[in-house]
Length: 110
Length: 120
Image (spheres, rainbow over the protein chains, first blue to last red):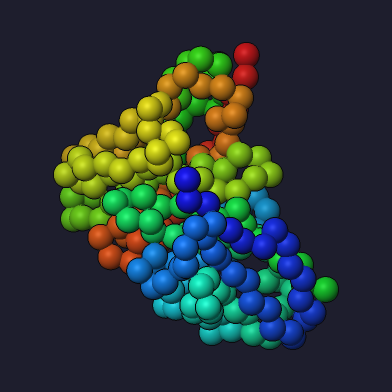
């Protein structure tokens, strides 16, 4: 069974840059997996940040960017702000209608 | 503005069947797209359950497929989820969302979610 992997936690200083990754236990992530990224603060609905690897959803600040780095999808936050402290989830499309979320990364800004 | 709203019971008993409905406004289901269900157990991550097209075509998470049914009512702009043989592990916030499965594959619009507790 294919599992989508994410760092369980990460920390960044205010104003700093952080890159969260999204990989596979078997194989490499490419644009063919249509990686998307979601931000969720406690008790809130997930918010779509990035779709199709690198396209920003409407209203998402340009300090959030998506890419493929090596064999993983990546979400980079440049100039982190206090309200970026959230859980971040990636979603990969495995084909044949099947989608899988990663376990999420808890980002701390301190 | 596409909006989704989940409704259904907040407490269900073990071994029973959960039935949830998602009402869509601001967009006619018959116009296209897939419509999906995602859940999140308390303190845990997101899990895709399954998605349905207005034509009735469905896709399911293989780990849940044997217990899940998703249906659509285009006349009411509504789609529904049923999960059978419930256990405490099915306790979660259940979200409905528009699933851009024919294009970018992401979930573009989400409902606010409804917490369902499985307990006797």
